Length: 399
Ligand code: GTP
Ligand code: IMP
Ligand code: MG
Image (cartoon, rainbow, N blue to C red):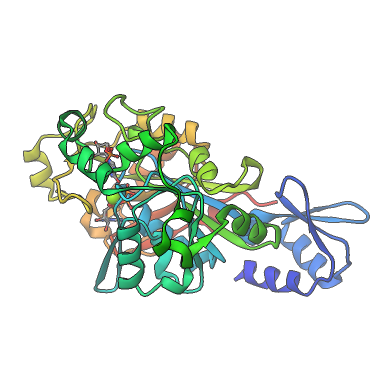
């Protein structure tokens, strides 16, 4: 509410420029009422001529959302919530490609998306796919049609294309399909061909021509105009090609810096980096999982999960504070979103207020936040979009 009053006030200011670092807006006019209001709220610094307002206060700038464990942390749900709350002009997807599967539940409807940004449920945002992403045109066209978002989708003309041969290799190569346990979506072989510079680009695929755009230019232009943008990651820290449990990893880095690069946004433009964790981390495919629990324990706790893309049973683990801390560090997290609080204590399912959470959940949050050292601002209490406690207003540092 406060933010929307300030944003509305800003819109009427005639002369508004942004600093090079994009962290503040300069107001060269003197809107007395606004000044008094903001000073009252202690959201500004000022000198004799200029007022500096922290862009975070206005909810402006680029927010990156990435996974902190082994993928499937519930990024789709968090992106959708942040989209409805922050009303971005653009939601742009970085990450590897259609190996990702995001689930979004709105009311009784459940969507699974692999290529279209999971923020699509928010109807007013342009939906972009960044140049770094591998595109499977069949998956993209089918999702865009089914979800009726064709008009809003833009694909960077430089995206590399996944072809049938990549999918066949991914499924038939015993190293990829069995030793690594890949998703069989062609991402690894296409990424290898991209590095060899033999893949096609989106601009060479006739079916994609209505969608082609310069996503980097669109996003930077929106940021320049003071609009809000969400940059959506996929997979998770533990399966990053650089930082994960090599060789049992995916075919690219998955950290926030990579997601920004995938979309063409420089580090100075990022205002928030939200790392998503789940109370019980999961892992699909092969590879070490330090805190993995037995299938029996997962059954007893009633927390079994199955993959969105492959349908494979996910291995379930206990909360891993060491990994969470390290992952938050490398991602440069400014906030943490945590999903599955209802798995820790079913009594909190659907809670929207911090006070509705149980002592068990509050203790978990307090301890986890102390170890990770980053504010836990988004607390998900169930898979449905509205099952969340959003503490950003209360917990983020102001001015
Ligand atoms: P990748 O990009 O593939 O890594 O996926 P993702 O991070 O978007 O997660 P995905 O949707 O694959 O898996 C998360 C699962 O947890 C989905 O089934 C969600 O519906 C579910 N989920 C999200 N938040 C919550 C929550 O707070 N509680 C419970 N019980 N489930 C949740
Ligand atoms: P690839 O990305 O299909 O090559 O698979 C490599 C490894 O990453 C395998 O262990 C997959 O299970 C895992 N992986 C890839 N995408 C996801 C995802 O979206 N969620 C969880 N694991 C994934
Ligand atoms: Mg997933």
